[in-house]
Length: 491
Image (cartoon, rainbow, N blue to C red; front, side):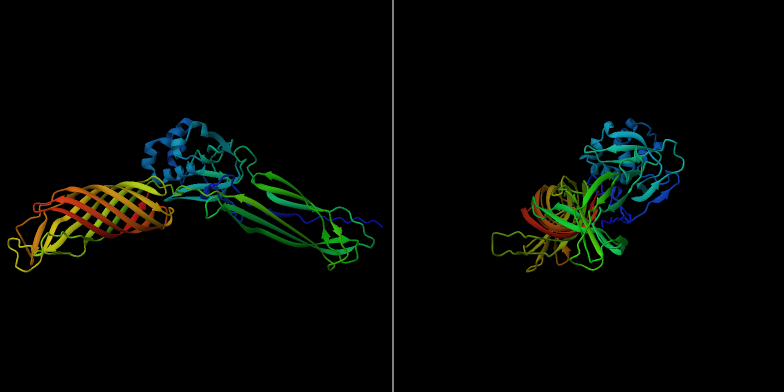
């Protein structure tokens, strides 16, 4: 007797794993599938993120928005806020940030109340909260906003009232429903032939969702893949089955996949057939699905910092002159205080160039018979105490913007003696003066640095600095060897 086995699987719902169609790294564009939005009903404007783009600042047209984004006063008066805005422009595809922004990239529109997404605010630093946007005081048409779209279609919003960034968890929010749906899974079976009275039978269902990331490998032109389990569902339901023998379920699955908002609706039709040759009195079904996402590695400096200030301090040794006779001798005078202050422009993650000024003391000891010197004693000679080399330099760096770096630098400039040099014997300053004059200088340096963040790092450097300066008694060709520890600040 033909019986019909009918199965209506319990509807399973889970929140979708939202994925941006673009590869932005800012928190603005990232959504945690486990979080629920906070209902935002207060008035906008208490913590303006980009005040230079706010309605209260007179930004009422696209042309005025573009003017506010490019006005030098915006960069000068709101340094942190403007830097955050410019970083977002970089992330949606503007290679030169605000400089590439055009009026055609700006739209004036309304966001539907109730739209879910990330909302920015400024409170000493830029932060973002996950909200259901329904603020007080907005018009009947919705929440007025500017939509900034990059060359590849990536975008974000800037709300009129507060000048804060907003990114919806639903790409249709600007003119669509402004909602995010859940994944709903349904399964149905076809009919089976059986010849026994129907009875209750447990049906075990296991569903596994995996996400696979395809990323750039460590070696050039290679790819790596890593997989993680995003969601696991196990459930048991009871069905009426006319089969009386042990059985299992097998068959080909059929999927229908439709993209709705940022989430996916899956419909499954599973033709089930009973197999009486194996298994206990239970039916089992396992579904495993993997989504593959391609992530591209950027080769430029993700920190987007353009300038670096370096301050170093330590000790310097220097070479000593040699005389063309065997009766007069020279020797070292040990370590002397040294320091350097430099500012440089970061052109790329591996090269920067700038201007530096150093503080170095040149000194050595000799036993020349200067007037007033005691016989058979060494004199301490200071050709310059200190000498200030002002130089242009270029520095090549191996390593990324964060963590460890190694660098090599070349410099050249002019050395300026500050104050009169002197010769000291047994604690007495002699009348003879080295009278050092300014002259050319050049240097070679090597170092390592560690950056804790995009802004701050520490360094250890060693350099060789050559001086070619004329004095009253001789022309000095000395080399200083400063070894210093330093701080690095990027902005």
